[in-house]
Image (cartoon, rainbow, N blue to C red; front, side, top):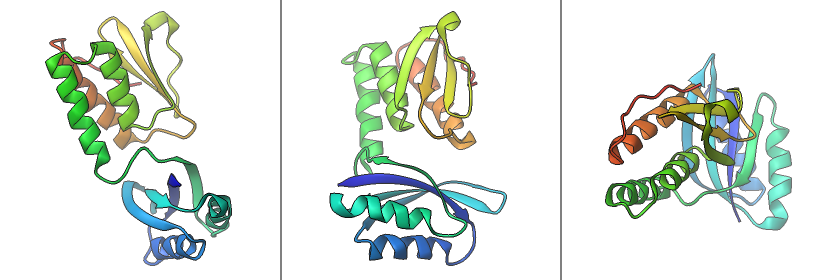
Length: 180
């Protein structure tokens, strides 16, 4: 099975090697590593890992046991390295050509790129409050609310803003946005 693991660890030589070694000893194969952000001497990494279903839970337990490493999230992967760019290009093409209905395209594109567990357009009055795990983006008279069970980083919030501006331009709507 393929899983995406987000972990936070000290930004020190050898720490990623220790994480990789633990994954390898547990039978996991790292397909990619994406550095999400650096902050206060720590780094947040997303790792795409292929591991047998029988070994997956044990591997996660071993990762969580590494001192100073925080296992932020583990869940199903959303594709192989490079697939995110392919999904982005296909989604934008669908919006530009009218193959995708604008609202569905917008929620699918931005929600998928940010690994949101839900992405919903709603009236402002019905929108949830913004929090570390809920991002709220202004879209015309409505809002796009993205949620997941781990925090959105500042970098991801910036990425969501850029994707929203691009999506709105692709569909001929004004590109004024503001993330909460």
